Every structure is written in structure tokens, then in C-alpha cells.
Image 1: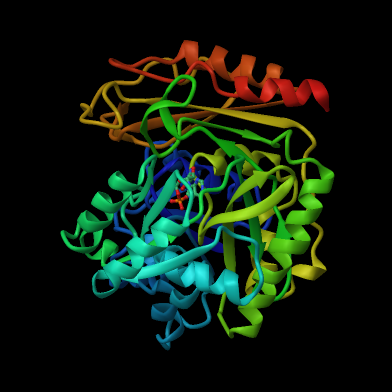
Image 2: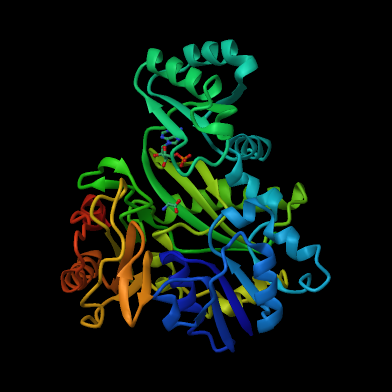
Length: 430
Ligand code: AMP
Ligand code: GLY
């Protein structure tokens, strides 16, 4: 099979790394890719939303299967672009239709889907500028803290959690009347605050059958002890010790099954990943959000724990025969540490030379924001590298990853030193 992976982050390097190990692979291409993906296949400099450019690659290289990394091309309708094109319609594509992608593209659509299919989630209502008064009345019904969510995609910044009602009303005005998040906040979802511990569950579905991937926890804040600004993610651990057998059973029965059946019932063409952000509230799972792609950096911790041939699994997704393939997972723990540019997630410099990449054999080094220049690997983004190690225990996996991190350097490098520390207590209980 000839395969094209769309995207350029750590997630896409992890996909390329895993697919490169498949016995079914002939040629692998990544668009646009990064310095790391160029070791797994051929990078082609086409943007993930340049559908005509992607079509050209698919035809020129005889691509059989496309894996879509980020949500942007999905929300913009890349799947329909393929299905509606006589030359592309038989190419397999791993990613949901635009209708499916709206589960991430619109919080209101996602909440309505959950309500319709009885999937546990926080109580909510959706408002527009014309219903601002009703929105403020709904706030009065809720207890603090107040959760306001811009309906549309807002680069991960559209959720506000406010401690008092005055602030909540002020922010609501900003979102609905002053377009705080542009078009994305023309509608606002207000919902009940859920008190619990968060984790991410990943499912791969062919629209009818599904496989549950390893669960993961990510670390979103820049600072140790979960402080400071939100980032794309500073590390990940898989599995998640507080998601034990009985909790995961509840997740499957109450959330995964009704979600996949919901796709079938609502005639949503969904062949791809569902990333379910969950809150564990006293042992019961509630959905915080759906994403229609894999998480980053969770992918870098999750894919190394899949023992099966991922291309074989993807082929089964495309043929809607996911129930017929075996899907094997490793029992090991994966610990991923993200190395970022100094200053990230605020302004940072790019183009710093990275050294020490060839020193470690203990870990898998996934590239996120890197590029090749005259044979040198340079930084080219905020999140630069994702260092993953697998071991029998989380402590060992962390030790290996941090050892690798110590061997790699670039000017201004920063990383969190406390990844996994909050989970130690659960591992010792297990
Ligand atoms: P989202 O973009 O929907 O994932 O929200 C961003 C973050 O806000 C989540 O990762 C949670 O930490 C938090 N959050 C969202 N909704 C709620 C809620 N209903 N209760 C508590 N925290 C929430
Ligand atoms: N790590 C969170 C995300 O990919 O959205």
C-alpha cells in the first residue's frame, strides 16, 4: 500500500513511525511533515488544507490510503472532497466526514448529539446574542464555577471557567456581543462545572465497529504543578492508573457504544478516530468534549503501545470490517515528555540547532516542530520534540525519557520536570 499522512506535528511523526513498521507498506509520504518524518518516508511540501495539492500527490504517487492528522482539513470537508471526486473516491481516507467532524467543530452540535443519544455529559444550554437575557438567567440557575464555551473552533482557547457570576456575565457579553473569539463565539454553550479528574480515551471506528485504544493523560499547562498558560500539551502518560477496569467498562457501555451507534442512527459517515475528553467524577465518566482526530501529545504515548499492524487496522476501517481484525496492545507504560522552545506558549524564537538527537537508544524521539536545513535539524515551532519511553513501570519509563531529554539540547529549551508525578499515588494503589 502507498500511504499519505497529512500533518506536521509529533502526532504525525508517531503515525509515520508506526506505519513505516507495517508489512503492508510500500511507500510512505507525509505532507508537509517535519525533519523526523523524513526518516520514515518522503515529505512533500503541501499544506493540509490545500485539497487540490493533496489530490495531485495522491494521483502522482498512487496513494491507496490517506491518514488525516489534524482536525482542520476534516472540518473543512476533505472526506467529501475525496468522495465527490471521480479519481479519488476509491482512495481510503482515515478521518470522519464533515458532518462527523462537527462534533469537534461545534460544541453545540456535540452537546446535542450527546443529549440525543443519552451520553453522560454536563447539563447545558446554548445561547446567541438574541438570547443573552435567557443566558444570564441560566447562569443564575448554576453554581460557580461557571463554564462558558465558544461554540466554534477557537484554537483551544474558547473555554472559560469563571469563579463568580459578575465575571461570567462580563465574559458572556464579550463573547456574544463583542465577538471575543470571532465567529466562533457567535454561539456560546453554558454548562455545569464537573468536579473530577480528566483523561483522554481514543477510539478507532469504521462507523459500525470500533476498537478502543490505550487511554492517556496529558499535561496541558506550561508550568509544573499544572500552573501557568495552556499549551498544546507538555507530556502524556499511558495507561491512566485511575481509569481501572471497572471505570473503562462504564466508559465503553455508557459512552463509546452509544457514540458509535449514534453515528449509525444519524447516518454520519465516520471512519476515523474519536478522541473523547472525559471527566472521572467519583468513578463515573462524563464527556467533556469530542475531538475527531488523535490527541497530540497523547498519540506519541498511545501508538507505541499498539502491537498490531496499524495499516492492517486502517484497511479494516476502510472496508468496514474492523470487527474482523485482532487489535493487540502492550501492557507497558509509555511516558512522553515534550521539549519546547523558550517562551512557548507565548512568543519564541525558531531556527535553533538541536544537538544530541543521535545519543539515545532508550527512547523514541518524535519530532514536532523541527525542520532540516543543510543536514542540520533546527527548531521550527513551539513544541519541538516528544520523547517517549516504554517500560514495565511508569517510574522506569519516566527515568528513561528524562535521561534522553538530558542528552538533547537547543538554545532556550524548556520542559516540565513533573510529568506523571500526580499519578504515582494511583500506581502504588493498583
Ligand atoms: P474543552 O475545550 O471542551 O476540552 O475544555 C477545555 C478544558 O476546560 C477541559 O480540558 C477541562 O479541563 C475544562 N472543562 C471543560 N468543560 C468543563 C466542565 N463542564 N467542567 C469542568 N471543567 C471543564
Ligand atoms: N492534547 C490535546 C489535544 O490534542 O487536543
